[in-house]
Image (cartoon, rainbow, N blue to C red; front, side, top):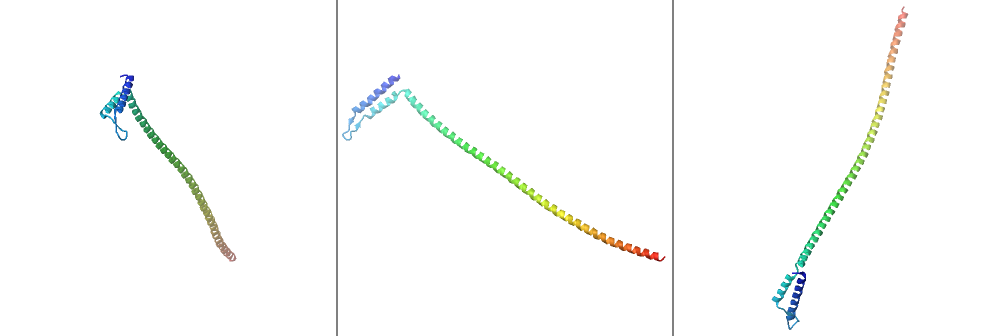
Length: 177
C-alpha cells in the first residue's frame, strides 16, 4: 500500500463515518442520535488498519523517545545528586582538614608557649637555688673563717701560755745557777 493510497483509504473511511452519522436516527428529545454501533466499530477498526505503518512506527518512536528523554532526565538528576553529595563530602573533608590543621597549629603554639614558660620557671628556680646555695656557701665560709679564727686565737693563747711557762722555767733555771 502506497502512502498516498493509505491517505485516500483513511479519507474514504472518514467519509463512511460521516455517512453513518448522517443516516443515524434523531431522538425526539435532546437532539441525540442513534447510530448503528456494529457498523461504527467496523469503520473504526478499518481506520486503524488503514493507518500507515510509518505513522505507527513514528508513534512508537515518539514513545521510545519520550522514555529515553525521561531516563536521561532521571540519570541527569541522579548524576547531579551524586555530584552534590560528592561536593558536600569534599567540602566537609576540606573543612575537617583545615580545622585539624588549625587545631594542630594551635596545639603546637600552646606547647611552645608552655615549654617557654616551663624553661623560664626552671631558670628562675635554678637561679633561686643557686642564690640560696651561694648564700649558704658564703655563710659556711664565714662560719668556717670564724671557727678557724677562734681555733687560732685559742691556739695562740695556749702557745702564749706555753711560752710564758717556758720563760718562767728558763728564768727560774737561770736564776738558780
